[in-house]
Length: 442
Image 1: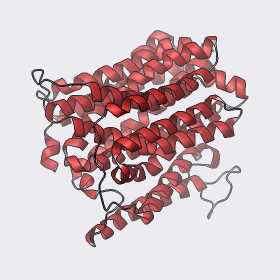
Image 2: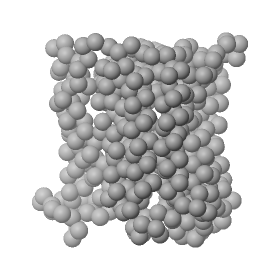
Image 3: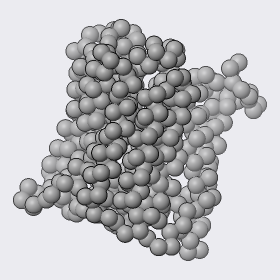
């Protein structure tokens, strides 16, 4: 499998392909990504109308990402048990219902509940996207399709910043989320055009694996989310408890990592006796595949942190409107989308390692520039330039790492790859946002 990961399929312009199926899959991905991106751009109006803090709005995003990361592996098994298209249809509607609840939110608790429900729906929806893509495309077509799928959240971000920015400025932030309820109905109706993937017999959900992985994700997320409030190493006066003076945040992080190790040990154990683990460990059986996941976690955490802090800086510190925020941030999301789609054209010229090194260098350069921008309160032009550098590197990495993951595993493990990607993406989103929240006092 590691040999497969070393080379990626090179796209060919001569092979005919229909993108009808991809359009439906992308629309569902946009439905989820629009929600995640509409929250940061709507911070100002939500804070004002619900009379909550900016950190409370960020916590709602953490709730969403936490529930996706905690239960996405269960979601992958549901797709195998009941059929990917059916799960795709049901969870798209459930996600839309959660967005309707978000639009009706009256306080932070209701907002967090809506995002938690949306996260549960997305946990089952996310793996189906990868399975349906792998079922309908192969070879160079699949490489391009995965690039489009990786770029979709960024494209949704650009759309969300404009739409949510306009609605939040001139009407109400609630319309942005209410719109997603109608999008879910459209996705449901169009989904009947997708080819159904037969359900697999004999699939069972490993309850012990679910408990170990879910509790691990929750502990790690809560630990990161409260680093600033409870203390990084030693507990402060705000900590609900302490053990030998140590902060609960540190204790949660350590126990969360230990539970993840227990999860992998348990999965190996039941696989050896012929039972089906929650996650097929073949998707992580080589050093290159494990390194890919680490890289995905890193870039997955940096992106959401930037996507939360920069709108916060523009709206709260500089006092700009949501529409002005959109103008500043949309080039960033477009840069992610463009690099995610077109980086596949370099697969035949550059090695994956070379692409990754250059991409990480772009991200580092962009983040360094943004640190000077925020520290010196520079204008919009420098914000855009820093975000463009980060976006070009981030988009390239998202597609590259996604392609390495999928090309390293057989087609029948596409659901497990999708689940693993979902865990990495959403755990890193929760950690990145939680880390950003720990740096601010608003």
